[in-house]
Every structure is written in C-alpha cells, then in structure tokens.
Amino acid sequence: LFPSVIISNVICIVKLFKTHAQTAASSRHATITVGILSFLFCVFNLAAILVGFVLPKVKCGGVRSELVMFTLLGLNSACNPAVYILRKAAMKDHLRSLLGK
Image (tube, rainbow, N blue to C red; front, side, top):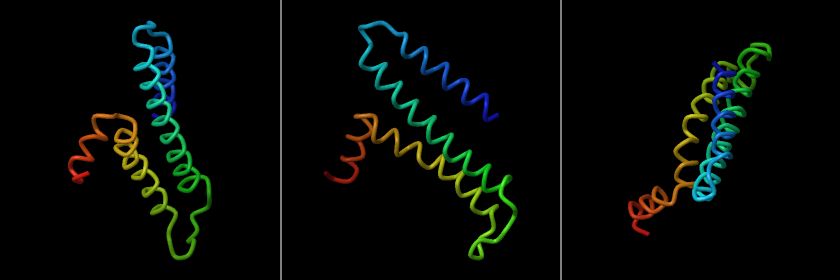
C-alpha cells in the first residue's frame, strides 16, 4: 500500500508540472500542496513502521510502541486538514469567519 501511494503521488506531481502555461500558478500551488501531503505521509508512516515493526517491542517510559505507532498514523490524517487550511485561501477565509476575525 505504501509504495502505491508514493508512486501515485509522484505521477500526480509530474502531471501537474506538465500543465499548460495558463494554469501554471494554480498547478504550481496544487503541486506544492500534493508535495507537502506526500512528505507528511512518508514521514509519519515511515516513523510508524520504524517504531512499530523495526524497533524492538520495548516500553519507553511506560508507553508501548504500538501506542506510538497508532498515534503517528493518526497524526498523519490529522495533519491533512491543517495543510489544506494553510494552503487554500477559501478554507483560510472560512476559518477566519468562523473564528470571528
């Protein structure tokens, strides 16, 4: 599953780079967003694999490695809305209106 996500993200980034000049700015913005999401996916999933499967099953300060692994996997999904809010002006404006700013 992990390699297929990486391959599909790389294909998406390459296709976004090859778009026409009239949509260059929006394509560049989308490419950066996909790149950030792909980077976060790799970081959190590789860390979860390292903690959950590669490192020995030891307690670290009373916390089991399985708990750390599932927390990292959850953080991957939790970061996606934050990335979209930071990258998309419409979402940023909506959040500001919700917060009353």
